[in-house]
Length: 325
Ligand SMILES: [Ca+2]
Image 1 (cartoon, rainbow, N blue to C red):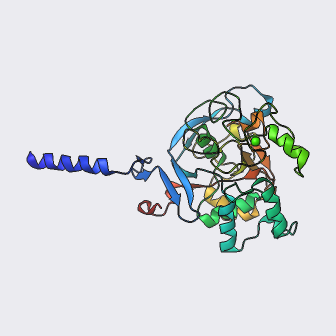
Image 2: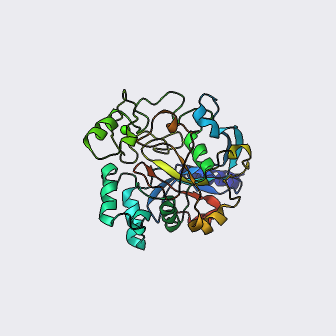
Image 3: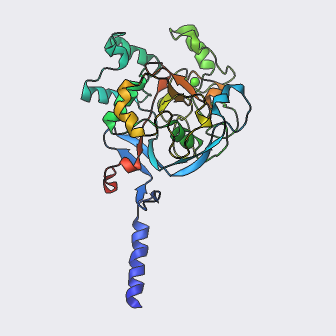
């Protein structure tokens, strides 16, 4: 009896010594830290537990979200997601280490100096989100970092942050300027005083979120899963091809458009020329485009001052779970 008591005592001590945030993954019974820093790009990442959700527009309240119907059940495996958008600093490090030329430079459309000058228009510090990157530019970064872009389903699941059927990542109330960086009255001032194109002139003129263009990452509150700027700041590229009616025939388990096998897409992404999904809205967005069920699409070589990305890492692709950084 005494030996059993001592063993229990040790177990209790060990339990108390476990780092805060150690939580259980999915069916492999491996304890995974809730927050990690990814070694390659020093990105903060948060564990998104496996689960299921009802994907799509639950409200039938706008014709603009017809491509977000029907509602369908989706199951996702556990994964890590960058807590914030890839920053200018992180992308510069990737370029420095690889010599990679982003699409606009590689295609000879702009010089390197002009490229960074454009970015500086909206992302004026290294802690701002990277913009002006094509889908391939984002994929190249993710490949270098040993990660990948999120699927559309992973994004929506993570963006909802456990809130279920709500319209926005903070709930059901309309944006008021405190939850995310959207197109507010400062954008109008910007159009009047700079070379930013008038396509961004749509703005919530009664709101002031403090930023005319992009904000430094993590300037607004995180959602329920600890993710920043999932709506607003910059819209983000996703892995999937944009298919307007995919919600009618989407696979249930880890869905991705067009390719049933993510690995196939990752191997052949250089040959992709079909439209890709963009989600979340950015500093030039208003209203519905900031909703967690809103879908957009861009040609893969589309580059915009309001478009960036973040990465994920699927747990089963972490080589040897004991070596998670
Ligand atoms: Ca703003």
